[in-house]
Length: 323
Image (tube, rainbow, N blue to C red; front, top):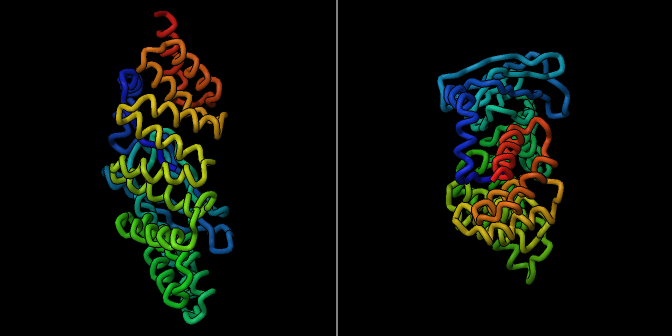
């Protein structure tokens, strides 16, 4: 789940404190690293695979090879967007076309390579074999080929409309958002036709959440809020969804409404530190300093020691308590 960002008075302090980090990140360089592992379709490590990293926003490219454990690592990275290409003789190359990197910490990547010969032995009249191949290609990051195979499966099994979710997921990875929305909406329409009440329907809740993310990626925050709320109404168990609705509301100046959703996120997951921080900012904007400080302190209590925002929040608490 993604989280949108907003600005308030104290965010200026963040910019001042971390300006040196931002400057280095502008060149695509920094102190962060990207680690990962390359595996075959059975989960076995592939040694000697070539891993190429190319920044889409800076003049930066790196190449490395995997070790006996299939592991690779790139060091000295900053905030940028990269394309990852993994190749090895005897395998179809796998491409991650768009990966956003942080200048602080990045999640480990698991990349799959599919043997080239596996396509030659595929029985394209067998729906199960076609679907499995599509899944393998998707897991390997070859989304264009996966899309072709999922379409072939739907031709073989046209009544299994839920498979169109897979098409939508491929379009998301390929950043063809309009087509992804069309596929997700198609499945939702079918679900609504078959069910008088979608309450508790995990598939429907997930689709509404996915649509919310897609609209948020396109900066259509009103639409994103609409779909996130639909997802929450069907399955109110995802703290990240409540948080995202709160972010949209806060960004729109609707602080009191935002507080309700931040508190819902806490109710669902009371040990998650993010909404406590944002509630601190909400109450600070409302001029309720004591309440803001209490939420800031809870954020510090729940956050890992290496969270880069902890020291900043401690300084904010210190300044507020002085006043």
